[in-house]
Image (cartoon, rainbow, N blue to C red; front, side, top):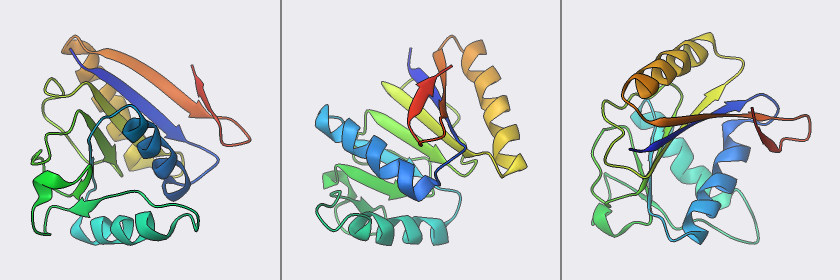
Length: 148
């Protein structure tokens, strides 16, 4: 069974929190796939991951570029896993039917978006019903994650 984590964005936006979590996954040797809700959002995340920090970058690509299977971090708006990722990030209410192929599935949802909160609640119930281990993480006032 997969670990299904829910990260509640309360203090910092997705653009600030996602790179940090992706970096931690890469440090563990995990490949990642980030699923957004639209091609436009994939493009925006693609651009952001190249420029979010002047001192580093996250190696990544999109599923529309050549050889997506070679990417340590793959950005997509689909449900495929061509880079054989162990971790799947779901952002902005993106949906996944089956978490079982992954070690970890991470739902990131924004406190200011009621649709995202409702989707996270539904996904929590579905993950528990499927027997996955679930955990809820919330940002504190400094933007650090605390397990609740």
